[in-house]
Length: 281
Image (tube, rainbow, N blue to C red; front, side, top):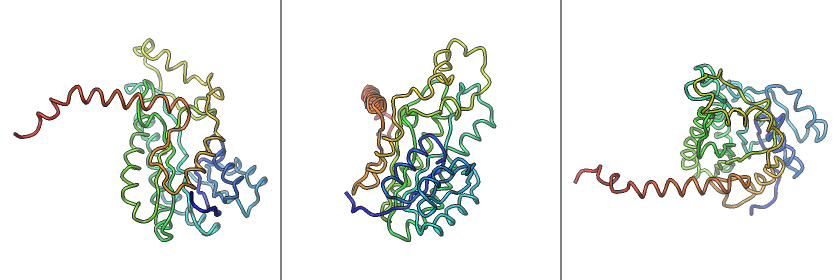
């Protein structure tokens, strides 16, 4: 484990849910947090509890690349550095692939993919200058497998996975770590207040009935995952000398994803002869 020292965390979407839990855990551990949200009123409680010397509240819409770069500069000016970036801002889009609109899909990628990209690009010059840093990409099991009715959300997380795998290889020489946080189901308002729904087509009523009900909001705040324990796991990862490239969080994630990968390995083995027949003799 690395020696204990105060770090500065830059957390997007810190006003509620997982982002708020991550901020509180870091602050309780003695860290400093640049907390961002589209509405800074939601950050007032953090400032009141921990003080302006520990919390830097910033208004930020991660879709705005120029605003992201400005916010990171402001955060560095106020806190002295950004040691940990937590790309947490994001939301879900529910709907069959045929149901979702162009605007909905573009909005989904603007936040979940491009928002994370802009934040990553903004912090890298400061991390490279310091020769250290850790980027925590808040992904999901939906970035490793897929679910009916969440195709575009899954696609956005798969894009984040590819971006982050490449990023990790590019920045390792600068002393910068990248960890994809593969979340299972955590107890937040995600399915109630953070989910956009496409207009349903009757053709999918039977196919998606169970999935639509599961994302109706009735399950909000009943999920098994504890946001605070997720934050504590991130703290442990940041303090590790050799942090993981991927971190599964939650029993559901730890059970499901190895099964998914075993199924893929089995299928690839079944079709290996055909795969090898595609090269020139």
